[in-house]
Length: 271
Image 1 (cartoon, rainbow, N blue to C red):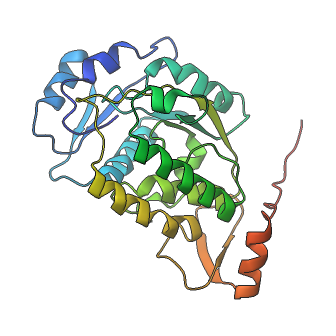
Image 2 (tube, helix red, strand yellow; image 1 turned 180 degrees about the vertical axis):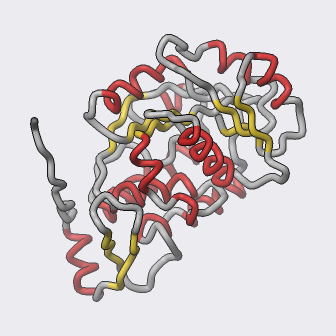
């Protein structure tokens, strides 16, 4: 749980966690101004990490994933403690990972009609659809949404990707999905209802605009800024030694826009 001022919603979120399949809860507090860490301990969360300074949403996630790996987790679910996403979907999120179907699962607010019915502001919904269509075009994907905060990952994903190089703000999420996509991993989605209410954390219009303008950069180049030319990725298969983004001629960039390029197949064996 990446937490910031989550005191009012933490208990409600925690009480819905299915502990028949969840072994441990980790809460990382990003220097809250309320009593989030104290409440977390009262609820029985034994692994509570409190940052000395506010590191931002992305910085908080980096600590979350480091702690989860250190705790020996095989599957890691990022659950916001603001009760915007229901923990009752955790089983649906982790089942495909546990059975080797996908290494990454997203809880999509856009699949179905849950987003607007749950109170998502219309401008955010429109921006979400536009940015997602743009990202699908550039990355050759068909995801319903890139901007959900409800995510689950295999241990391998968190160990292999160079997450420490990513931004410490909200654009971290898109940088991470860019890394996952360009590394050739597959992503699954489940429909997820959402709730927008006063105590649920949500970035304001100004920060939403900043986030929106920041999305094209990791879409085209997860490790850096918006390119004047397109980029391609090279990596050693399944290693953490990523060398991102050699410039491509503009002609190849135009070919990329004409249609998605197939990702290289990974070797597999059935024993």
